[in-house]
Image 1: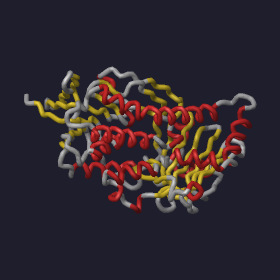
Image 2: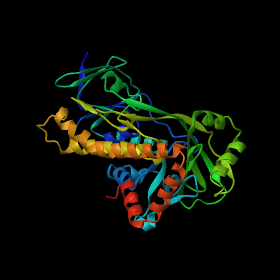
Image 3: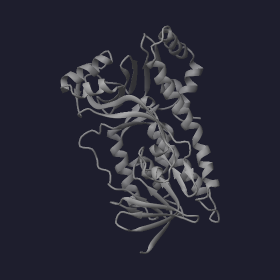
Image 4: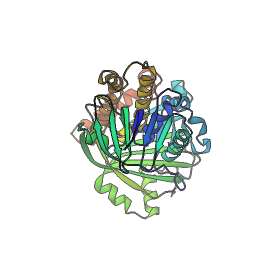
Length: 389
């Protein structure tokens, strides 16, 4: 059977893989993307939302996607309030940080659909969908992928962007170190009685970490990271009782809640992948790392992976091999620091508020209050979080 040759072959059409494809649109590279199902817009409001940092909003602008996202479905984050478990509070303000907003809350499906439409219009890209990868062979000169229908594809560089349970990573034997948290992330959307004013709120509670993320209008999305048994119990609650539970957990700051989407939950785990590159291979997005959702930075890391890898490929001269391990090692080094920092900080915070050692509670809450009283430190933290350095 005839082999179709490409320069870059992306396996996985999630947000990270799609954004990489878009970032390569004006290049000389021949790109292909393999995906089983096209994204579909959610019926109503998507329960899966992301906090997009300003740095990643700029990335989406640069690849031509941001301007097409529906403004009426987006909510800017003007401030963030974080509450400890003993009257401790830490707050961040876009105004105090000297930026227009701390980030944006966007629905996952809206971003995915717009990215998909963008790559469909892309002259240098071949979209293979529906398609399933079946056999992968890594040669010295190219990676060769056989699809489920027998088609053969060859590429100088194969990109694994196929999620946390990556088929590409598993087939090539790249180790993933998983640390289950024994928790689930409970997600749901609500209509709230009072306006949220673009303020994101987060509580470190005895039963987990609860985040209220402001959506367009008087709506918000929650992510409640809580032990498995508590998550299952809340999933079984009638809608009215779940609304009351979520509103009360946030001290009824926004009044009564009305459920917009049924609650759902997913298991949480920390995932570290020591090696994200190999000859002719690079991993990005959830295939390359996994962090606790308390930071809201999961897809931000994925977008920055795509930006870094695209920048490396664009800057590579024609005579240089884009699949060489030496070249790809630069991508791994470039992404290692931010990924390690986010994984370490989120894991440490989770463990800090999970522990019940005597004397630890007042100490950690004192630390929050002290940080809140130091404007220079607060400004450094928020500017790092939004990618303003």
